[in-house]
Length: 380
Image (tube, rainbow, N blue to C red):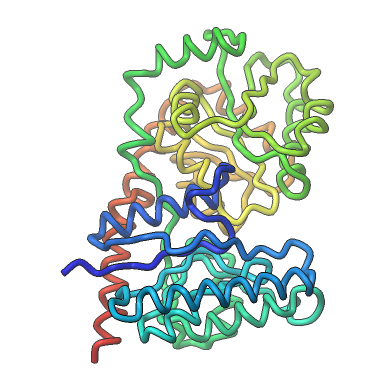
């Protein structure tokens, strides 16, 4: 009998209309669970994000969540799923459903990508922090794609905490294999965006919102200035409230093109048509876009952070530069553009790196093994 998985993503459900890395990874987790042989179903689309830590809003969220949890408990009482699986919880978006439902049904509670910030124990997000702590204590397994989050949770739960690494992953059969379509994709995109197909194409993907993403685009502007006189096109993929400000800062450079938000299919076409992926990664946890680019055979240049560091096979699939250092980023871009042989070799290394370390097949096998271990323990 196929084990059923109740899947929930409190920050952003996989059906949400706005593209983001969170939504992409939620969808990939569902695919990986199904590929591992589980019958995985999204059981709620409740978003628990409290952006400002507002107590009145938190009250409303918790009342609504309690009602939804009661309905789920009633729905599953006579035929409960094998496990509850929550993706991405932290103090701004705690899991208001999984702990209650899994406890009432007597099923294991598993989380993926949890983060903890001790500094939030007091202040506006104290309730979200406490709820996240409670969920972490209850968890039978904590799967971590971001190494930056490991030390805090390990310290909080102790050396015997049920934590396992889950490397970020993509579906290589979907993201890669586009070499045959590259000429057509490149010609179509060149016509649409007014690009010279004989020049190198750089591509960057990131939402255009205030905060860390905006800071990454500011570093791109500084990098452009440091690359004055070098011919290339730099395609920026993304949209959001900070776009007008970013355009004012970057658009005057004739090498820049704004492609806007793209569908998954359009993004794959853009990656296969381009030559190099560049992203400063300011404040980045980890990113799906660099993995998708490497799967398409693009070398990557990323700002060096704990999360992004694990996405790159340094000097084989791409280059890491100090976070926020536009001069170092410009030197890395210049180095690869002036060395077509290195660029081509890194492109091959990029796809090989994803195949070895970040493909959905490996993730599905890891999920099967880890979840089987939890289920075996719960049946003793």
